[in-house]
Image 1 (tube, rainbow, N blue to C red):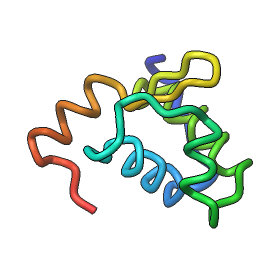
Image 2 (cartoon, rainbow, N blue to C red; image 1 turned 45 degrees about the vertical axis):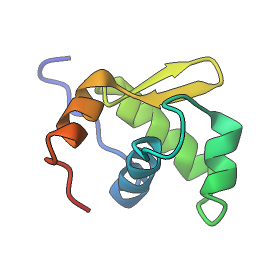
Image 3 (cartoon, helix red, strand yellow; image 1 turned 180 degrees about the horizontal axis):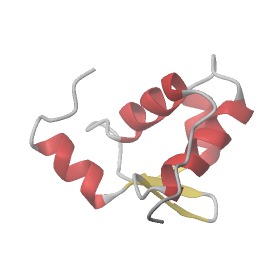
Amino acid sequence: MPGQDIYPADPGTERVVLFVLLRSEHPQCWSRLELERDLYDVDPDAIRGSLSSLAAVGVVSLDGEQVQASPAARRIDALDMICV
């Protein structure tokens, strides 16, 4: 939404969530439970908050319990524009 800023509770958690969703050795679609298991050392509430804020700006797509990086995020990753 133009003119409305969305601030994440924890940008570090957003980065790690997106990094995991972009991993090439895993199918594109993750369940929320899979993501929480993979990020076992991250607070599940922080993961949920990060997914909500990333979805609000179109970086991830949420469909019920299914989560995936958006096509735009995948394209930027393919162009090697995402550096960690």
